[in-house]
Length: 277
Image (cartoon, rainbow, N blue to C red):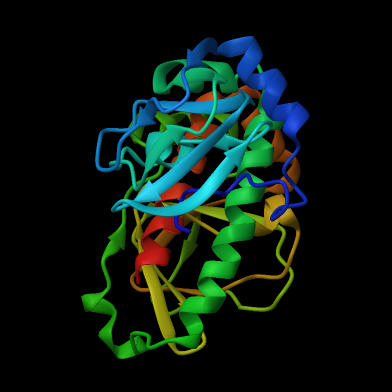
């Protein structure tokens, strides 16, 4: 279903409608939608996300029915997080009230509601683990074809990387030589990693998932859901990596909204790209 139902309560035990309701009511704007009226259209730019306060909204793609969003659910968030066009059309099945929040307000609101950011991270990771498992059942890229795998974009810009360095003055980036194994699939993990310099290859089994370069991150999933590693990582070149443990990760999400929003955008983009492979 791509990005259409990632906060569906029936599909994710980590979704809490009350947390979402409080977040949107505190930071968004109520909007009435008449029965039969469109909320957004397929392939249009995604400028806002919505919490459905009352009523029902039908989702269609190419004129074909996909799903029905009911009160207490969220829609439109993936397009905002990834800056990608809408993947479906949303139209009110009945008179509805939604709480609308645009991208700018979302970024500032996260600072006041870190619990909502952590909930979204957990939901995205849950779906990403499922998408990766499904991808591994299909045809994948052999490890020898690393140069054919597109690199993931930088999650953190230069300013945020500088902030992270300042946040951990006593823990400088650690050097990892070319071909060094950094983490192994199936193991427990206590760190996420930020690539300060160099490149890291992420694999599952014999299949390459992505190559992470400067400004990119990997290993963050275990800090949120505390599950086993979903993939292995090895240095493609000499690297300098910053490691962040769970306590520091949670503190950063709660005190640095740019950190949390950057991770949300990264995971949402990774989920969307994985689902298309």
